[in-house]
Length: 477
Ligand code: SAH
Ligand code: SF4
Ligand code: F3S
Image (cartoon, rainbow, N blue to C red; front, side, top):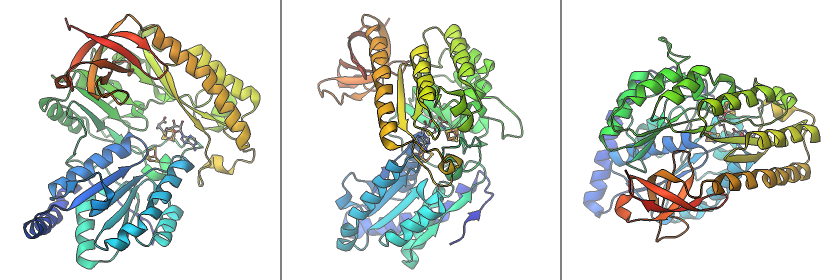
């Protein structure tokens, strides 16, 4: 099966209407005969991009008469929305796909689909289609908006469909979205990535960077605000380069100023920021826009300028530290989080010490730490000086020994302070409590009535751990 490159206009989703109507009719007929709705289950792996794509697929499935289930055994359609970022993400999916063989045997009508980043890699797609014959539908990150059409074709022909595109056109507009929360929402502002960090598979699975039009983003934000949404998270692999692919150039900072005006929205988050594109204009916007939270996720990946060069990150250790200084000066109470890769090819003890040095100097609120994982097809996979696993693991443990106490100390310093929390739901630690996040993205557990889920409350911090805080609700002024 050869790859197809498509140049698709942003309103292409409109063409799905005919398939949606047909699917709906089919599902209504099934309902009127059996009294049961067809059920779907989406298993999502990977980043917020995938989570949001899953929300869109769920939106489409709801529109054509499917109902969600959380029990695989009762599902008529199971979709794996997959991730390829590290080997363990990939292995998880193979494991699950294997387990499904018996389900399909018991229920030949069951439709199993694999989509997302894994099939975007030709050899992974080949492997899935050959090894897992019980998979009916394989598609990618560029054409998932055609889910109704693919389902319709599959049901008509009973022939498995393998359709993965190398790249898409403009970001597709107009898809429905079944959002998990009514009070907070992800909004994609762009797709793809042009940065080609040498370790990373994303530019190969998500294609080239393309921004949505500011008016489309704004109307989505306004619509959400009218529905009661209080917090939005603007998503992109590198939001700092938002607008560069548009005919009428606009910067990410300008977009923030526009969104900051939307009535009803109380908090604006965004991720991810690439240090090489974080401009003074953006720092000013973060400072000036009252709704933009005092939190920035700013991956540094490695503290060694030599490794950063090999990673193709386009900044040095010194430039990163300088950037942090600027941010802390402009926004003194800013919380900084980051991503760090340990054991990149060629990383010496000295290089690793530089990583530890950045952690100690910046004092991040928290960090996602990863063992370097070889991704076939990326330049780093070809580098000769790969680091042995035991060395990677030892360095990883040493990194956490430095990182965790810093997170803990920062959290302890918050005891006694009162913070505004967006209440997100019942606490996972203790069902008698609720939990939510501060503007600085700290998870806080506290006692309060369930009716407050979705609202902003003030909580005085009383207890601090490395990964979360506890507190008591106080009256909002
Ligand atoms: N676009 C974002 C997120 C990319 S993926 C960014 O640029 O930060 C999230 C994180 O996964 C990356 O920041 C990186 O730390 C990690 N990552 C990516 N590829 C990896 C690999 N091959 N091995 C280990 N970690 C990796
Ligand atoms: Fe991957 Fe780098 Fe793009 Fe992030 S910026 S998605 S790490 S290539
Ligand atoms: Fe994974 Fe794809 Fe996101 S590879 S991290 S799901 S963009």
